[in-house]
View 1: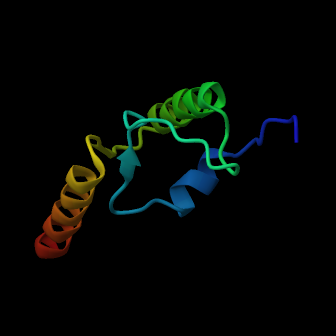
View 2: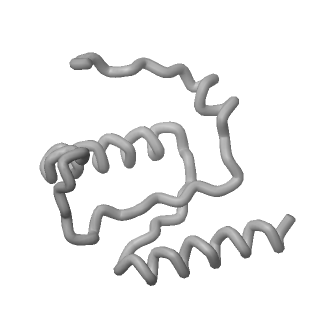
Length: 84
């Protein structure tokens, strides 16, 4: 809506997750009519990374083709479940 959403650190702390999976934007861009354009997608990626870094939120980055991404996500989730 043309305005930046201001969130306090308390919001991030209250909503902290045990696992953050961050999908890299390294797959081919496909416009399906509902997505941001590619430039906006890349700007949003940069913004998300800045916010995560600014609040010291650790995340696991998932990249590669769709099958590799799926396997990485499953493995990270299984690792978390087994650790608890």
